Image (cartoon, rainbow, N blue to C red; front, side, top):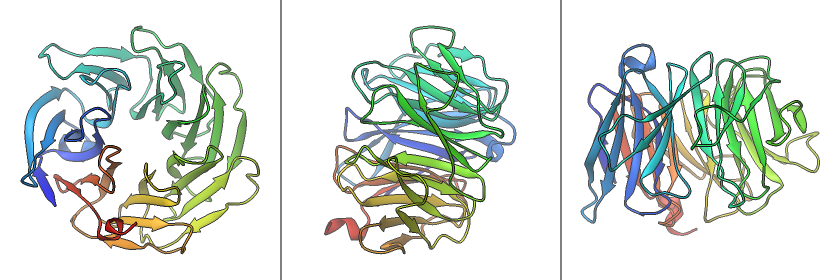
Length: 315
Protein backbone atom coordinates (compact mmCIF):
# COMPACT_ATOMS: atom_id res chain seq x y z
CA UNK A 1 0.00 0.00 0.00
CA UNK A 2 1.23 3.48 -0.88
CA UNK A 3 0.38 6.33 1.49
CA UNK A 4 0.73 10.11 1.49
CA UNK A 5 0.19 12.67 4.25
CA UNK A 6 -1.57 15.98 3.51
CA UNK A 7 -0.38 18.02 6.53
CA UNK A 8 -3.07 20.19 8.13
CA UNK A 9 -5.40 19.35 5.26
CA UNK A 10 -8.28 16.90 5.50
CA UNK A 11 -9.08 14.74 2.48
CA UNK A 12 -12.45 15.09 0.76
CA UNK A 13 -12.03 13.64 -2.73
CA UNK A 14 -9.55 11.54 -4.71
CA UNK A 15 -9.54 10.83 -8.46
CA UNK A 16 -7.23 8.77 -10.65
CA UNK A 17 -6.33 10.19 -14.04
CA UNK A 18 -8.22 8.57 -16.95
CA UNK A 19 -5.09 9.16 -19.07
CA UNK A 20 -2.10 8.26 -16.89
CA UNK A 21 -2.35 5.17 -14.64
CA UNK A 22 0.10 6.65 -12.13
CA UNK A 23 -1.39 10.12 -11.66
CA UNK A 24 -4.09 11.14 -9.19
CA UNK A 25 -5.47 14.30 -7.64
CA UNK A 26 -6.70 14.85 -4.09
CA UNK A 27 -8.97 17.71 -2.98
CA UNK A 28 -8.50 18.74 0.65
CA UNK A 29 -9.74 21.31 3.15
CA UNK A 30 -8.27 23.02 6.17
CA UNK A 31 -9.95 22.63 9.58
CA UNK A 32 -12.19 19.76 8.40
CA UNK A 33 -13.80 22.00 5.78
CA UNK A 34 -15.46 24.22 8.38
CA UNK A 35 -13.19 27.20 7.76
CA UNK A 36 -9.85 28.06 6.17
CA UNK A 37 -8.47 27.25 2.74
CA UNK A 38 -8.11 24.24 0.49
CA UNK A 39 -5.27 22.48 -1.32
CA UNK A 40 -5.34 20.41 -4.49
CA UNK A 41 -2.55 17.81 -4.64
CA UNK A 42 -1.29 16.23 -7.86
CA UNK A 43 0.36 12.94 -6.90
CA UNK A 44 2.22 10.18 -8.71
CA UNK A 45 2.37 6.55 -7.65
CA UNK A 46 5.67 5.00 -8.62
CA UNK A 47 6.99 1.47 -8.84
CA UNK A 48 8.30 1.62 -5.27
CA UNK A 49 4.77 1.69 -3.83
CA UNK A 50 5.18 5.33 -2.90
CA UNK A 51 3.13 8.43 -3.57
CA UNK A 52 5.11 11.47 -4.65
CA UNK A 53 3.84 15.04 -4.75
CA UNK A 54 4.23 16.51 -8.23
CA UNK A 55 2.46 19.83 -7.66
CA UNK A 56 0.04 21.48 -5.32
CA UNK A 57 -2.44 24.29 -5.82
CA UNK A 58 -3.93 26.54 -3.14
CA UNK A 59 -7.45 27.90 -2.93
CA UNK A 60 -8.93 30.38 -0.46
CA UNK A 61 -11.72 28.03 0.67
CA UNK A 62 -12.10 24.33 1.31
CA UNK A 63 -12.17 21.98 -1.70
CA UNK A 64 -14.91 19.33 -1.47
CA UNK A 65 -14.68 17.43 -4.76
CA UNK A 66 -12.53 17.08 -7.88
CA UNK A 67 -12.93 15.47 -11.31
CA UNK A 68 -10.65 15.08 -14.32
CA UNK A 69 -11.50 16.37 -17.76
CA UNK A 70 -12.44 13.55 -20.11
CA UNK A 71 -10.67 15.22 -23.04
CA UNK A 72 -7.58 16.98 -21.63
CA UNK A 73 -5.10 15.17 -19.34
CA UNK A 74 -3.93 18.48 -17.85
CA UNK A 75 -7.32 19.80 -16.70
CA UNK A 76 -9.34 19.11 -13.53
CA UNK A 77 -12.36 20.81 -11.98
CA UNK A 78 -12.85 21.32 -8.25
CA UNK A 79 -15.85 22.30 -6.12
CA UNK A 80 -15.47 24.49 -3.07
CA UNK A 81 -17.08 25.95 0.00
CA UNK A 82 -17.18 29.49 -1.41
CA UNK A 83 -19.94 28.46 -3.90
CA UNK A 84 -17.52 28.22 -6.84
CA UNK A 85 -16.08 25.76 -9.31
CA UNK A 86 -12.42 26.06 -10.30
CA UNK A 87 -11.00 24.82 -13.61
CA UNK A 88 -7.29 24.13 -13.14
CA UNK A 89 -4.54 23.52 -15.68
CA UNK A 90 -2.14 21.22 -13.83
CA UNK A 91 0.83 22.32 -15.94
CA UNK A 92 0.49 26.04 -15.18
CA UNK A 93 0.86 28.29 -12.14
CA UNK A 94 -1.92 30.60 -13.25
CA UNK A 95 -5.04 31.09 -11.16
CA UNK A 96 -7.89 28.81 -12.24
CA UNK A 97 -10.93 29.83 -14.22
CA UNK A 98 -13.74 30.34 -11.72
CA UNK A 99 -17.42 29.57 -12.23
CA UNK A 100 -19.48 31.40 -9.63
CA UNK A 101 -23.27 31.04 -9.68
CA UNK A 102 -24.29 28.76 -6.82
CA UNK A 103 -25.66 30.38 -3.66
CA UNK A 104 -24.11 27.94 -1.18
CA UNK A 105 -21.31 25.36 -0.95
CA UNK A 106 -20.69 23.21 -4.02
CA UNK A 107 -20.30 19.63 -2.82
CA UNK A 108 -20.05 17.54 -5.99
CA UNK A 109 -18.74 17.89 -9.53
CA UNK A 110 -18.77 15.44 -12.44
CA UNK A 111 -17.63 15.51 -16.07
CA UNK A 112 -19.82 13.82 -18.70
CA UNK A 113 -18.63 10.37 -19.74
CA UNK A 114 -20.35 10.08 -23.13
CA UNK A 115 -18.49 11.43 -26.12
CA UNK A 116 -21.40 13.28 -27.72
CA UNK A 117 -20.95 16.31 -25.47
CA UNK A 118 -18.48 17.44 -22.83
CA UNK A 119 -20.32 19.07 -19.96
CA UNK A 120 -19.84 19.45 -16.21
CA UNK A 121 -22.54 19.20 -13.56
CA UNK A 122 -22.26 20.63 -10.06
CA UNK A 123 -24.42 19.81 -7.03
CA UNK A 124 -24.82 22.35 -4.27
CA UNK A 125 -26.21 22.92 -0.82
CA UNK A 126 -28.42 25.58 -2.44
CA UNK A 127 -30.64 22.61 -3.48
CA UNK A 128 -29.78 22.92 -7.19
CA UNK A 129 -27.69 21.19 -9.84
CA UNK A 130 -26.10 23.31 -12.57
CA UNK A 131 -24.95 22.35 -16.07
CA UNK A 132 -21.76 23.94 -17.41
CA UNK A 133 -19.81 24.13 -20.62
CA UNK A 134 -16.21 24.29 -19.27
CA UNK A 135 -15.40 26.90 -21.93
CA UNK A 136 -18.12 29.32 -20.81
CA UNK A 137 -18.37 31.53 -17.73
CA UNK A 138 -22.11 31.12 -17.19
CA UNK A 139 -24.09 27.94 -16.65
CA UNK A 140 -26.23 26.46 -19.40
CA UNK A 141 -29.07 25.29 -17.14
CA UNK A 142 -30.14 25.10 -13.50
CA UNK A 143 -32.07 22.07 -12.23
CA UNK A 144 -34.48 22.73 -9.35
CA UNK A 145 -36.54 20.07 -7.66
CA UNK A 146 -34.82 18.88 -4.51
CA UNK A 147 -36.24 20.16 -1.25
CA UNK A 148 -32.96 19.94 0.64
CA UNK A 149 -29.27 20.26 -0.15
CA UNK A 150 -27.92 18.17 -3.02
CA UNK A 151 -24.95 16.04 -2.03
CA UNK A 152 -24.07 14.32 -5.30
CA UNK A 153 -24.87 14.39 -9.01
CA UNK A 154 -23.42 11.86 -11.46
CA UNK A 155 -23.60 11.49 -15.23
CA UNK A 156 -24.71 8.18 -16.71
CA UNK A 157 -21.73 6.57 -18.50
CA UNK A 158 -24.14 5.04 -21.01
CA UNK A 159 -27.09 7.36 -21.70
CA UNK A 160 -26.30 10.76 -23.29
CA UNK A 161 -27.71 13.82 -21.48
CA UNK A 162 -28.78 11.73 -18.47
CA UNK A 163 -27.65 12.29 -14.90
CA UNK A 164 -28.84 11.41 -11.40
CA UNK A 165 -28.85 13.56 -8.27
CA UNK A 166 -29.34 12.65 -4.61
CA UNK A 167 -30.24 14.86 -1.71
CA UNK A 168 -30.86 15.30 1.98
CA UNK A 169 -34.56 14.97 1.15
CA UNK A 170 -34.11 11.19 0.74
CA UNK A 171 -34.78 11.19 -2.99
CA UNK A 172 -32.93 10.30 -6.16
CA UNK A 173 -33.91 12.27 -9.24
CA UNK A 174 -33.10 11.42 -12.84
CA UNK A 175 -32.66 14.30 -15.28
CA UNK A 176 -32.37 14.96 -18.98
CA UNK A 177 -29.85 17.78 -19.25
CA UNK A 178 -31.79 19.21 -22.19
CA UNK A 179 -34.88 19.68 -19.98
CA UNK A 180 -34.11 21.57 -16.77
CA UNK A 181 -37.74 22.16 -15.80
CA UNK A 182 -38.74 18.74 -14.50
CA UNK A 183 -36.86 15.58 -13.54
CA UNK A 184 -37.49 12.52 -15.71
CA UNK A 185 -38.13 10.54 -12.53
CA UNK A 186 -38.07 11.09 -8.78
CA UNK A 187 -38.09 8.36 -6.14
CA UNK A 188 -37.74 8.12 -2.39
CA UNK A 189 -34.74 5.80 -2.05
CA UNK A 190 -33.79 6.15 1.65
CA UNK A 191 -35.55 7.19 4.84
CA UNK A 192 -32.49 9.34 5.49
CA UNK A 193 -30.19 11.76 3.72
CA UNK A 194 -28.78 10.33 0.48
CA UNK A 195 -25.09 11.19 0.28
CA UNK A 196 -23.89 9.40 -2.85
CA UNK A 197 -24.94 7.67 -6.05
CA UNK A 198 -23.14 5.88 -8.85
CA UNK A 199 -23.98 4.13 -12.11
CA UNK A 200 -23.03 0.56 -12.94
CA UNK A 201 -20.37 0.57 -15.65
CA UNK A 202 -21.72 -2.59 -17.36
CA UNK A 203 -25.52 -2.24 -17.16
CA UNK A 204 -27.12 1.08 -18.10
CA UNK A 205 -30.22 0.28 -16.01
CA UNK A 206 -28.48 -0.21 -12.65
CA UNK A 207 -27.69 2.64 -10.26
CA UNK A 208 -26.78 2.53 -6.55
CA UNK A 209 -27.42 4.99 -3.73
CA UNK A 210 -25.91 5.34 -0.26
CA UNK A 211 -27.29 7.15 2.77
CA UNK A 212 -26.70 8.43 6.25
CA UNK A 213 -28.61 5.31 7.37
CA UNK A 214 -25.51 3.24 6.56
CA UNK A 215 -27.27 1.42 3.73
CA UNK A 216 -26.29 0.92 0.09
CA UNK A 217 -29.17 0.18 -2.25
CA UNK A 218 -29.24 -0.85 -5.90
CA UNK A 219 -31.99 0.17 -8.29
CA UNK A 220 -33.17 -0.91 -11.72
CA UNK A 221 -34.33 2.09 -13.75
CA UNK A 222 -37.03 -0.04 -15.38
CA UNK A 223 -38.74 -0.57 -12.01
CA UNK A 224 -37.79 1.74 -9.15
CA UNK A 225 -40.56 0.58 -6.82
CA UNK A 226 -38.11 -1.41 -4.68
CA UNK A 227 -34.33 -1.96 -4.59
CA UNK A 228 -32.83 -4.91 -6.43
CA UNK A 229 -30.20 -5.27 -3.69
CA UNK A 230 -29.39 -3.85 -0.29
CA UNK A 231 -25.90 -3.95 1.24
CA UNK A 232 -25.65 -3.90 5.03
CA UNK A 233 -22.64 -3.61 7.29
CA UNK A 234 -21.55 0.02 7.64
CA UNK A 235 -21.92 1.30 11.18
CA UNK A 236 -22.29 4.96 10.19
CA UNK A 237 -23.24 7.05 7.18
CA UNK A 238 -21.87 5.90 3.81
CA UNK A 239 -20.10 8.91 2.38
CA UNK A 240 -19.31 7.70 -1.15
CA UNK A 241 -19.86 4.62 -3.31
CA UNK A 242 -18.42 3.63 -6.66
CA UNK A 243 -18.99 0.68 -8.97
CA UNK A 244 -15.88 -1.13 -10.14
CA UNK A 245 -14.83 -0.28 -13.70
CA UNK A 246 -13.81 -3.92 -14.19
CA UNK A 247 -16.53 -6.00 -12.46
CA UNK A 248 -20.28 -5.63 -12.99
CA UNK A 249 -21.34 -6.51 -9.44
CA UNK A 250 -18.47 -5.08 -7.33
CA UNK A 251 -18.91 -1.82 -5.40
CA UNK A 252 -16.52 0.06 -3.10
CA UNK A 253 -17.69 2.34 -0.29
CA UNK A 254 -16.21 4.68 2.29
CA UNK A 255 -17.91 5.62 5.52
CA UNK A 256 -17.93 7.78 8.60
CA UNK A 257 -17.17 4.56 10.52
CA UNK A 258 -13.54 4.96 9.34
CA UNK A 259 -13.77 2.02 6.92
CA UNK A 260 -13.40 1.30 3.23
CA UNK A 261 -15.43 -1.72 2.17
CA UNK A 262 -15.67 -3.89 -0.95
CA UNK A 263 -19.02 -5.48 -1.81
CA UNK A 264 -20.22 -7.97 -4.42
CA UNK A 265 -23.99 -7.70 -4.65
CA UNK A 266 -24.21 -10.86 -6.76
CA UNK A 267 -22.83 -12.94 -3.87
CA UNK A 268 -23.88 -11.51 -0.50
CA UNK A 269 -25.42 -8.54 1.29
CA UNK A 270 -22.43 -8.05 3.57
CA UNK A 271 -18.98 -6.76 2.61
CA UNK A 272 -16.50 -9.18 1.09
CA UNK A 273 -13.67 -7.14 2.62
CA UNK A 274 -13.45 -4.38 5.21
CA UNK A 275 -10.32 -2.20 5.28
CA UNK A 276 -9.59 -0.18 8.43
CA UNK A 277 -6.57 2.00 7.75
CA UNK A 278 -8.02 5.40 8.62
CA UNK A 279 -8.54 6.94 12.06
CA UNK A 280 -11.16 9.48 10.98
CA UNK A 281 -14.07 9.85 8.56
CA UNK A 282 -13.22 8.45 5.11
CA UNK A 283 -14.51 10.83 2.45
CA UNK A 284 -12.78 10.23 -0.88
CA UNK A 285 -12.88 7.09 -3.01
CA UNK A 286 -11.94 6.11 -6.56
CA UNK A 287 -11.14 3.04 -8.63
CA UNK A 288 -8.21 3.30 -11.02
CA UNK A 289 -9.73 2.47 -14.41
CA UNK A 290 -6.24 1.85 -15.85
CA UNK A 291 -5.03 -0.60 -13.17
CA UNK A 292 -7.37 -3.48 -12.48
CA UNK A 293 -8.34 -3.79 -8.82
CA UNK A 294 -6.49 -0.69 -7.61
CA UNK A 295 -8.35 1.74 -5.39
CA UNK A 296 -7.63 5.03 -3.66
CA UNK A 297 -9.18 6.63 -0.58
CA UNK A 298 -8.61 9.68 1.60
CA UNK A 299 -10.00 10.94 4.87
CA UNK A 300 -10.07 13.50 7.62
CA UNK A 301 -6.95 11.94 9.18
CA UNK A 302 -4.95 13.64 6.38
CA UNK A 303 -3.95 10.29 4.86
CA UNK A 304 -4.21 9.21 1.23
CA UNK A 305 -3.93 5.49 0.47
CA UNK A 306 -3.55 3.71 -2.88
CA UNK A 307 -3.83 -0.07 -2.72
CA UNK A 308 -5.36 -3.24 -4.14
CA UNK A 309 -7.78 -4.93 -1.70
CA UNK A 310 -6.99 -8.56 -1.05
CA UNK A 311 -10.34 -9.70 -2.39
CA UNK A 312 -9.64 -8.03 -5.74
CA UNK A 313 -6.58 -10.19 -6.34
CA UNK A 314 -8.86 -13.11 -7.20
CA UNK A 315 -11.87 -11.39 -8.74
